[in-house]
Length: 97
Image 1 (cartoon, rainbow, N blue to C red):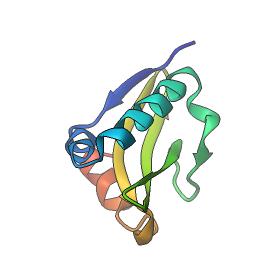
Image 2: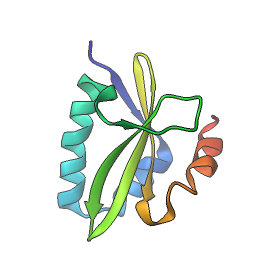
Image 3: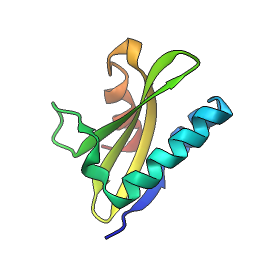
């Protein structure tokens, strides 16, 4: 079963600020998520099926956060690893979760 990716408007805005080489690598990782969204590490502490994709942009650790709700995978946002997911609740509220 292949899942359907649904990027949020906020994620698409954030994607514009990323290095083009990093964006290409991220696209490859998102293709793998379409095949199996449970392959990445799950974010605990939420009642949702939230997962993250690790990547580095301009020597800064970042995470793409996505939500699995069969058959859809909602790509929510990009977080800086420095902030330790502190903005995640705000982004979830913004997305309506």
